[in-house]
Length: 609
Image (tube, rainbow, N blue to C red; front, side, top):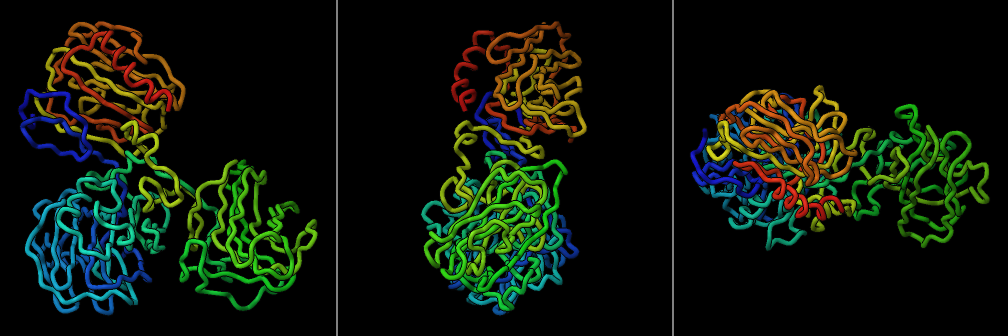
């Protein structure tokens, strides 16, 4: 037993790791994703990022595997600014173009820590997990207005001082956050910007929780996307990483590469396209330095990408692209699917020199040539269209997915898009909190879970107890026939634990030692209220307020020192993948009337969502 206490049934709190004798039974949520740097050659290229002025705040979550020998967290050259670790171990500090200035030694080097480095003119301060840390340092004024190289996880040129560990939630503000604002971000990890700070102060935000792809997306709106070199995605990072399990993140794919770079290298060109390519023209997202576009000024120009028929039987797709009409020549844009059919857009009515988004869904073709411009067998006026293009996107499926920026390779697996500055919305405008946050549910992704540290309030001996949970029915095949919802610790087959779980037929089960009872099935995606009760003699299971079945059970002690888990047990293949809400553990047997009352109080929230 970690803590002795008599209190129980206290609120769930994902900030976790309660060590107080009050025994609030808070859960530490292991839902974060992060980039894992190997200490050999991994880094993120941020060339192009700039920061004006002499005040700044750098905020990031870091779990180090090796603190020794100068590991660089952030490095920008010219007037040099480095944030990194020391050469004697467990130190964090910065280099201000003249010398290393170390804040202090980290005592907890095994868990994920949240750091904030605040630079206010000639003074630098460090905050660790929301609290002031170490010794303030006098530094030389920093100027990052025009660095030639910027990198995360290595020296600015990506050649040395490689980080060995996991990093996520990297933010840069062009203002010096106060101690209260730093604490606000730490205590509320779903916040993008702390209270009292304008959104425009955030110049870079890399959540680094996409879970896939070679781009670290900038959620600040400034377009400072990072190119990942070597670093890989990892899951199950604990607090204080921003809790993706309580956010319904927007996922997307894009089967086209170089979605914003219409260069000769990226797109096949036919029929003597213009030899020059425009750069630096303002794109639809307002970013004028990252896009390259063709202007089509003569007849029969074609640019295209050949898209494989992913999966063999995928026959539908959603497509979009931005087009700017230059006003002379032809009036139609033709998109060909490589089989003599396609889609024609009449751009004659588009206002000149203004970006317009063309999008359409449920295109029933199995393979694609993506732009076929002019050489159109059925266009009325195909020749000489003068236009610019940006933001090409193609995804399989009957509906149009969210836009996903791509570089040299297509994004063929779903990538999580970062939240934007608009409160509660991601960069595509999707509301992140509309349902899941309202319900207070964990939206688990098959790699996430929560843990409640053991204490005496969760030791029931051979006495009665109850387990209760709301669940959105889902089963994933992951090497086990069970997906665990809630367990009193360890392996669900262990005699000293009890559990609620679901099987491949979507049957909810309550297990007490080797005795188990099944509440029948549910339909995938349906919310269900499940309660397992041991009354000292029998085990009972209730589904959606109604008693289902009872079985006799021999009393087995449930006193143990195991961590209690939500969304998995000690077997890593038994993760749950979907929403779980209101997990509760009682130190007594609930009555049928209490179960019905609990179901009635929640059914309008969950069953109508």
